[in-house]
Amino acid sequence: MLKTSWKYALALVCAVTLACNSGKAPAEAAMKRAEEAVAGAQTEAANLVPDDMKSLSDDMAAARATMAKGDYKTAEASAQAIQQKANDVLAKAKTKKDELTTAWGQLSDSVPKMLDAIKSRVDILSQSKKLPKGMDAARLASAKDGLAAATAGWGEAQEAYKAGKWSDAIAKGTSARDKATEVMAALGMQAGGAPAAAPAK
Image (cartoon, rainbow, N blue to C red; front, side, top):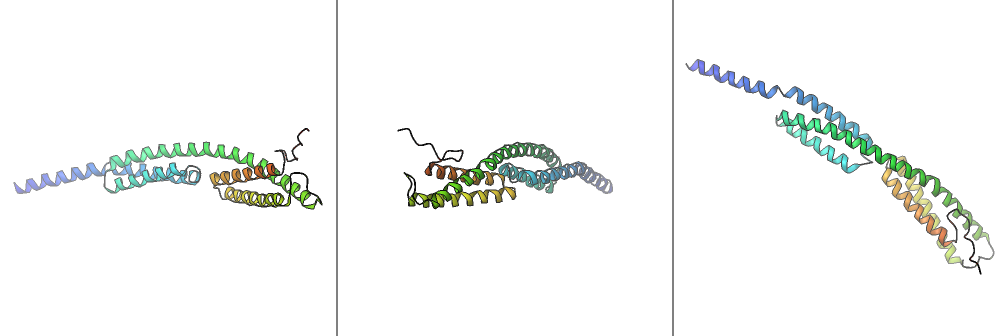
């Protein structure tokens, strides 16, 4: 009788173990695919949509913890959801990259031209024996400082762009453009780079 009871107990343990482990292989496969999806998204999305990437990484960490506890069914479901979320994050990153690429293209086209125009104007004024009406030495010095600041800012924007820090590059580039616009206004220049027309008398 006792021997029979042990047989039943052993059979029950084996059944439970088999039931638990039966979901392990699919869960491990799903986790591997999820890990690959997150790794793939990391390269493209980390600098473009950092908040979304952090959320995705947090979900992956939670899925690993669930897997470690032996809750294979939940871990598998989480891993499958992570794979879809990774695709969504990648799609969002691509859209963001397209937007930033357009914005950077506009900055790259306008800022260098603005800086060249300002430098040309400053050089002309610096070489003039007599400054035009509305311009004095202090104002010219301020313009030179502004040009230096805008030039440095644009240089930082380019470095950020080369490093793949898209959002930072756009922010710095926009700041440089705004500073250049301010200097041009102080010098009486139009957006095209020419001195503003004198008002009619």
